[in-house]
Structure formats: C-alpha cells, structure tokens
Length: 234
Image (cartoon, rainbow, N blue to C red):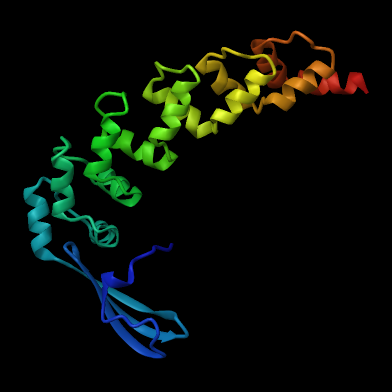
C-alpha cells in the first residue's frame, strides 16, 4: 500500500538527509514513529504506532467503541479527528459509521463540498451518496451537461450509473448524429454497457440493417447476432 502526505505533516523529517533518520507523524488519534535511512531523497525503515488514549476515550464518548489498533492507525493516516467528525455533524451527519468516515475523508469530502452537493437538486444526500459522487468524479459541470441535453429529471441513482459507464456529453451527441435523438436514460445505460456506439450503429447499417432500432441493436449485441451478420456479409 502507499499514501501521499505533505512534508509539513511530519516532525523532524529531512528527506535530503543522507543518513539515519527519526521522525514522527502526530495526529489526534496517535503518533507514528519512523526510524530508518534516507539517501538521495529515498527512504527505507521501520515504524511504530502509539495510539492516543485520550482520543480513544473521546471517541467512546462520541459513540465509537472498541476501536482496534488498525482502525486507529487508519485514523492517523487519514487524519480523522474529532474536529472532522464535528464538521460532519454540522451538516446533519450525527453519527456516521467508521467506514463512512474513512471513505469520506479518503476522498476529500468536506462540509463545504457536502453543502454544495446538497444544492445539486437530488435532495438530502447521505454519506454513502457523497462517497459515490467523489469516487465517480461527478461535478456540477457533468450534471449541467446532462441537463442541457434534455435529462432534466435525472435521479441520483441514474446519474451514478451514467457516470460509472462513461456516458458523456460526446457519447450522447455521437448517438444523436446517427439518428437517435431522444434516447431514454435506461436505454443509454444499456447501450453503453453493451459497448454500442455510433461506429457500431454505422456497421450494422452497412450490414443491411438500415432502420435498426435501439432495442434491436441491444438485442443483436446481447445475442451475438452481429457476428453472424458479419460472417454472412463476408
């Protein structure tokens, strides 16, 4: 596994030191002590993790019991603190699960981002929703591009499916360029999942299917009938 950290997160670290080094990463959940050797900007060594007992008590008071050493270590590396938990509380997440906290923090979900996302027209979003949005790279520009193409009443779940499959503004415009103007969202999802694009449509028409419909394209692709057509054409 690997993780990136700003140099200023560490105390006593000189990455340019060509010598034995000792330094620490100290956060509310505990401290990681590093001991090793740096040479030419690269280091190797061991580490020792010491949990913060006070943090464990505070977390217990917040409703998070039985935190394992592994969980506490992850809270250090992700910098999950009581201030972050309180930040999440400020947007209505009273007691997010540890998995939710890990997911949101790892993906950079902040209170500011959550407030912004709540205004995207999908109602109140849960921690899981925010994690999905961040993981998929969904932003206001993508949402607006979909709405501009006529998908005004797009549900949150359909938005996730479209983005997950890579349905972009260009893909929709290409399909429209070959005659499919008003493709329902469900059919867009099916077509993209099946690998049907404008080039595939042109190929089917070249094989004699001049007036092939969306449903027929999906059925042809799903059953492998396109391969049979190709062989017959040859």
